[in-house]
Amino acid sequence: MRHAEVLSLLADVRLIAILRGDFGDRILDIVDALVDGGIRMLEVSTVSPNYAGSIAAIVRQHGRQVAVGAGTVLNLNHLATVMDAGATFIVSPDGNKDVIEKARKGGCASFPGVFTPTEITTAIRYGADAVKLFPAATLGPGFVRGVRGPLPDLKMIPTGGVNLDNIEEWFRAGAHAVAIGSELVNAANVDDLKALSHKARQYSQAAMRPANG
Image (cartoon, rainbow, N blue to C red; front, side, top):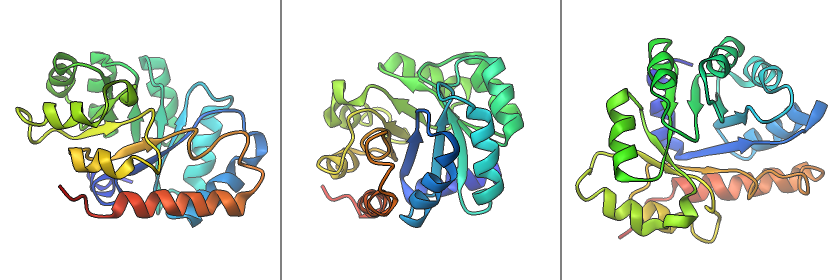
């Protein structure tokens, strides 16, 4: 999936599902359930065992319909590994200039982590396609609304604390998309793939509803 296609998909589905943990040989079954539930963007964290192998396997099975990315990309070694595995976007907890620029040169979308207006504008200046607000729950939807006053074109992806109870509030505040981790996929719920698919459907439908207000 090309850079422009990833950004277009993000604008359409407005949701990234995060896979973080040791799911072993069940990873593809879990991904199948998520895709069946409408998930079209998946982020595999580099803190997960065999993250590169998981990315490559997901790309082989779903790469034509799903944008597969990598999370917690902290350095150029991480970046090279996940791009070689087929990742088409990266998410970072920080705004590493070298990682952002190298990703963009390689045709990989970059969503670095930010927490302040200065970090936001710096990441955009380095070439970020969108920014990950993390941990979002600490600041709340009001921060998104406030920052988008002087920066109306800002594409912000709140991450950390977004759930079915507040997802629409984040979009009303002006979030471009949201990322969902353990609220969707965790060690306790992957044993019931039908329920996981149902929950994924709830999130994907909530993300695609028009924001009012």
